[in-house]
Structure formats: C-alpha cells, structure tokens
Length: 464
Image 1 (cartoon, rainbow, N blue to C red):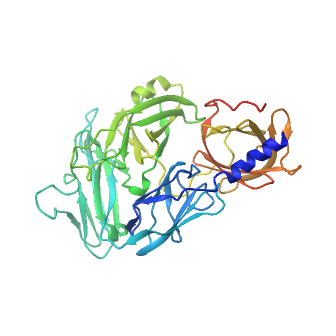
Image 2: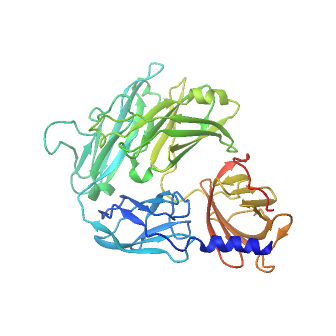
Image 3: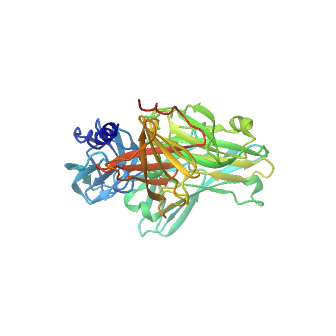
C-alpha cells in the first residue's frame, strides 16, 4: 500500500513535465497593455482566474512584468498583457506541475500606439420608471491633463463624416452631458473611448437620478467600467429578498461578437447554499454597432427572489456558458416607496479579499474535494484521504501551513518513511489554492471553489 501512495505522488509531480509548446495569439499589442492574449496548449494546468505573481497556480510574464490571468483552463490561458516599452519580449509561462517555466523567446511584440481605451457606461439610457419616477443618466468627464481629450464611441452622434465627430474635453475642465450619449432600446449600456495616452488624465463619472425626486435624493453613482474589470465569473453579494425592494440585474459581454448565454447561480449569502440555477440569454447588438454597444441583458430578479424570502440575503454568481468569456454585471436595488437606488457591484480589480479564518464547508474543482470542519480538515483525491487539523487562523494574506497524514484504504499512512505530510493553502475571494508536499517532492496546482456546507458531487471511492 505504501508503494501505491508514493507512486501516486510521483505521478502527480512528474507526469506533466513534457509540455507541448504553447501558441500565442495575437503575437503583438500596444505599449499601453490591456490586450487579451490567448495562450493555448494541451497541458496548461492550474485554475486561478486572476494571478498576480508566481505564487499562484499559473503565471505569465511579458518580459519582467506579470500579466493578469482572467481565463485559466488546462487548454488555454487568456491573459491581459501589462504595459511595457516598445519592442519584442520573452513570454514566460509558469505551470506548477512543471519544474521549469516555459520561456518563449521574443514571442510578443509591443508597438507604440495612438489607440483608445474603452470604457463601459453600464446605464446609458434615460426615461420613465415605476411609481412616477423619471430617471436620467448624467455623465461627466474631468480632464486633469494639459491637452484636449477627444471622447468617441457612443458619446458621439453618428454621421457620415470621416473621421466621426467627438466630444472635446478641454484641459482642467469638467464637461457634463446627458442627451449626447446614444443608446439602443433593450440594451442598458454603451461604450465610450478616450485616447490611451490620456486615459489616466480623464475621470469619468456616471450618476443616475430620479428627476421627479431630486429635492429628496442626489441619486446613485454608477461605476465606469474598464476592460480590466471584466472577469469570467461575476459575484454579487448581499442582495436583499425583502418585498419592499425590487432588484434588476444587468449583465454585459466583453465581446459583442463572441458571447454565449450566462448562468445565474443564486446562493444563500451567509453559508453559500445553492438555491437556484437560472440560464439567461444575452441580447445581440445590431450589426455594425458592436464597437459602441455591448451584448447585454437586463432582467428583474424579483421572480427568482420571491420563492427565496426565507433567506434574508442572497448572492448571485454569474458565468458565461463556457466559463471562459469575460463579462461584467451589477444589480440595482430600488426602494418601492422612496425610489432610492442602491447598487451591488463586483469588487474592482485589485488585491483579493481574504478571510481571517478558513471558511467551514466544502471546496471542490469537480474531481477533488476538501471539507473544512471545526477541528479537522479532510482532502479527498482519487481514493486517498488527507487529514490535518483545521488552522485556527490565517495569515494576513489568507494563507496557512500545517502538517497531516494521507490514508489509502483503512487507517492513516505516513508518506516518505514516517516524515509528516505538509499541507499549504491560501484562501481569497471564495477560492482555495491548495498544495501538498510529500517527502519526495511538491505536488501542487489544486484550485478549488468554496461551495458551502453541502457536498456537490460524489466523493471518490475508497482504495481497495
């Protein structure tokens, strides 16, 4: 039995050393970064949706700068290229189950550009609402730079002129407009563009207010969404089920020409229990308008929430049908009496949220399972079960290290001639990066999602 377990870990540590050479498309982008780069191969292990460094399951470097991974499957990594000086750079792909990273020499070329940065205005339309409300979207651009900034896209009135007209924001000036922003009936959002060279000098703000009640409330500020804020899974937490409120969900596709339906997974906000699964189709943008408007959907959550009123608050997880194409979304919650609006939006790009303690319940990636109990944590993989004492607290970055044993069949079995088995993990944004260190070498790459107190799936069978 000891030989079986050792072989299991040897297989995990060495089976993926021989890797196909990845392909990279496109092979060039602008010096401002932010371009989506697809890296494809048959053995890209690890499942982190966003990886800021080499400590994550996978990482990609452009020269000496880390890219931000937004799609990570065994067959493809989609990464946002970081800013870099012009010229060709090596692309380094770090895979935890391969001891040496894959280095593709001069595989990506940065080119100087005068390109634009795209910004999503999530609510572009103005018009009547329920209970005699009259909602208006007000957009303001503040140019803190020293040169004129030309705003194009849905902010410009379409004409046959070439180049098309644009809204000009003079230096150190704020320009407000409402009626200039174009919209398409049935599509809540619109794209605008500012020069990439001036993007950091422009502050974009969006406010939706009820003009019938301006004396009582200022309205609500809507986030202006950059391409970096689109992710493969949108999580919206703390949505009330109280009948005094009505809730509206809006979802937007990153690419208006390549998108699929999305799936809503509604969970109890306190313990993550899955309460409902709802497929939702996005509406296609009319041909020729894909650069100015995102494929999107706007639906009421009330019919979904109504049967769930015994749960005070719910969480909605949203992913595209293949869980690989980036999306963004928000929920607006309106008080039926005052018409005051509150927004629930996903966390902005940046450091992941980490808990103080390891959340109790189940984590899974579909084939492996971890159950965190008050006193003991069990890791189920193939027909083996690892056991260690549940850490009482986590480090500031959400990580922990501990020791335990691995059993195969009845009874615990130490690995490596009695040397304790080391377990290491890090929790952030509902995901657990998990590493097992047997005496013979590291076995890494597990990336499991927290699914709550209920087991989703079936545990592996016991070893014979």
